[in-house]
Image 1 (cartoon, rainbow, N blue to C red):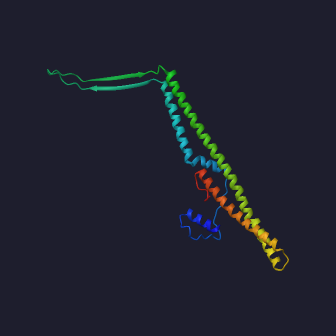
Image 2: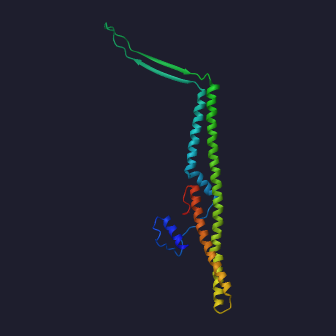
Image 3: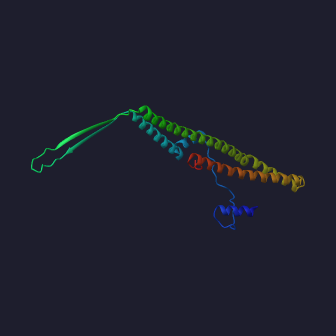
Length: 227
């Protein structure tokens, strides 16, 4: 089993399968305090996905405003100045200036402009609901991951500070008793196996906290392992 896991680890970190894997005696890790509401607020502010939705919402608002302006007449004002040359007979002609004013009246407002506004407002509602839906999804994901992190963290600390030290004391006590024929070998073996199982659970819980932290960082959009 060790040889198989050694090869898998080397493959993950781009090394040859036969490279020895040395496990550290102690692992450096951090267990930051997770505040669910703070993470949800932070995700809403810094996550690029929400920024994208807000931009799309602003664009939808601008389209609604533009469609509403279709009910108003369009005024076009122009000015022209014409320089005229003399006639072939040499008679001079005066230059002249002109001003042009045109008005486009939306006479089909109920059939054209109103439908355009309805369409743009529907698009606006769609963007609002999309943003709200995405927000709820992220909130739910952060809440679930935060609860899972706290549960795994509590288990890790319980194993580290209570269960493993007590199991080690029991093993030492039975070993001392077995050496003077006051303890049964079967009890010693069973206790030693339980101690190994608690150690395995400790490392599994430690791995779990770091994995959940990475998943929370992805949900929030910021690395949380340095808090």
